[in-house]
Amino acid sequence: MMKRAKAIIFWVIMIVGVFILLRAFIGDYMLKKNGVCAKAILINEQNRVRSQKATLLYEFNVNGKYYKGNSLEENLTRVGDSIYVVYLESFPSINKPLKYFEVGKIKCNCNK
Image (tube, helix red, strand yellow):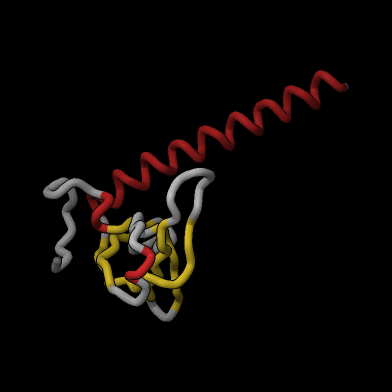
């Protein structure tokens, strides 16, 4: 019984890990091919990962609902400035700032 429980826990952890990795790769691919542009505002919330510098979050609106993401912007004095973000129309929670992508590697028509 204990062996079976350990096996189930192992496979659940493996499946969740694979899902997280695939979501990142598939999300980037889909954003490059089918991303929709939007203007976002840098907000006074920060994302800090361990010893890395803090970065500002952004917020944008799609059909009356607000979504947030990491702007990758380390200049914390830019709160209130606007940036362009790319999101999936079907899943706006999957989004990245336009500057995340290499120039010419995304089929998005954002006005820079």
